[in-house]
Amino acid sequence: MADFMKLLAQAQEMQGKFQTLQADLQKESVTASAGGGMVTVEANGQGTVRSIKIDPSVVNATDVEMLEDLVLVAVTEAQKKAQEIQQREMGKLTGGMSLPFKLPF
Image 1 (tube, rainbow, N blue to C red):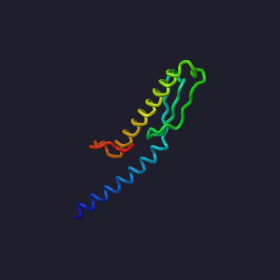
Image 2 (cartoon, rainbow, N blue to C red):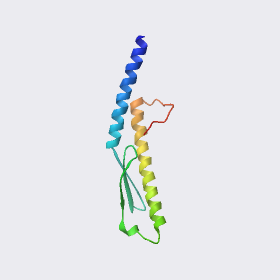
Image 3 (cartoon, rainbow, N blue to C red):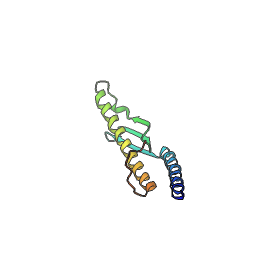
Image 4 (cartoon, rainbow, N blue to C red):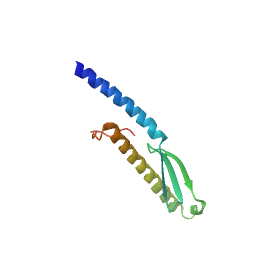
């Protein structure tokens, strides 16, 4: 029974650390750009986009597809950077232990 209580305490401690990590990731900031800086996206450490800045020179009513592509590239890159931060921080939390499931952020 003592082993079970120890395991339960460790699980509760890990849950607390996980919640702290999630809060910390919300405070993190990553930035990515496309088109040589014509489109810039800022996201938090969880990959949620906070802002998108578009250089007015790239706005062209006859070529909306290019702008859409630039926005997509910048958003994807920002989310990729956020995922890298998540993995790095989770690795610190778990001591490099590989988890058999994907985390919800």
